[in-house]
Amino acid sequence: MIEYSKIDFSNGLKLIVHQDKTTPMVAVNILYGVGSRDESSSRTGFAHLFEHLMFSGSANVDDFDVPIQMAGGENNAFTNSDMTNFYNVVPKENLETVLWLESDRMTMLNVDQENLDIQKKVVVEEFKETCLNQPYGDMWHRMSEEVYRFHSYNWPTIGKDISHVEKASLQDVREFYQRFYQPSNAIISVVGDIEIQEIVDLITRYFPTEGAPDSSIKEEIPKEEPQQEYRKRVLNSDVPADALYLGFRMCERNHKDYYKADLLSDILANGRSSRFHTNLYKGTDYFTTIDAYISGTIDPGLFMIEAKINQDRDTDVAYAKIWEQLDKLKQEEISEQVVTKLINKIESAQVYSEINPLNKAINLCYYTYIGDTELINTQISAYASITAADLKAYAEKLFVKENCTEIRYVKNM
Image (cartoon, rainbow, N blue to C red; front, side, top):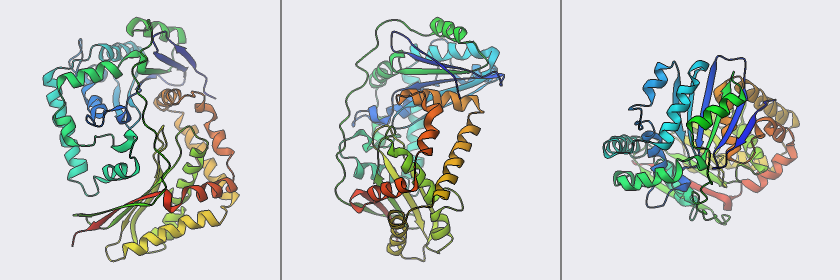
């Protein structure tokens, strides 16, 4: 059981503190409620660009990394469709340094033309390397376009078009910063051998905590209607082998069926005893790789299956073999023993991860962001309540042709 204290400041800033006396280190995590879903369709890639810009210096610090390293710590960040997350781990005695640095870049980031030009070049090169010059690198662009016709999941985190970042003006970027990187849109968690009141005092010293919250940050995002037809796009491309990507529309992260989808992905592709590994990868010579996973997005997301096909085998036959495995999930109930084993594995992984103060800090912010901090303690019970019959019923609902989008890469001859 992880005990924590939550403090909501009047300006919308949220703080979660967990005391962990087992470690000499302290983890500080800051989550900003901005991801690619919050961008304009004509100005995409900005959330990812800002992940880079936030390390470019602020009013009092030229380079964010240097003082963290001098304090004996480490730091990094990640961005996805729903949020941007910055995390730090330092010895306890250097906690104040981290909070000072984070407050400086929240309130006084150095967004000037020189820094913008540097980071634009970095992001543009990353776009070229990962999306344009890498086999299958544009898959998420193609899948997102096909699945999401209205919702802003229509483009991946790195952006819809490389020109959006290339043409980003200093004014565009400053407006994005002022709108999203502010206390009303932030959640801070601190985990370590610390006292709650000590952290509250430090937060109020370094961060703005008073005033009214900004209600203009978020705009309503259009909802995607249920998919009613099978969608398919074939891409003739200079790839090493044919590939199949199947995306099934699934529920949002806070829905009870999310846990069923997660378990189904484990049954199909988690480990050497999984069905895909046993029956398709080892059981046939059609696949060089095959995997299944879920997107886990705040709004309704995707259950993904991706497979690379042996160049000597027929891709249509490989496609049919994947559907055979999905149909078995719909037709035959999984044994309770298998379900129990999977749930125990998830529980063990969660318990093990909670040894790490950084994992706890990240999770406390994330669960707070999606609306239920207590999930850090109760999530395992959501898995434990699922039966084999539940999984079969959800598979029948999920793995339907009309609910599927296929992106197929065909190797140029």
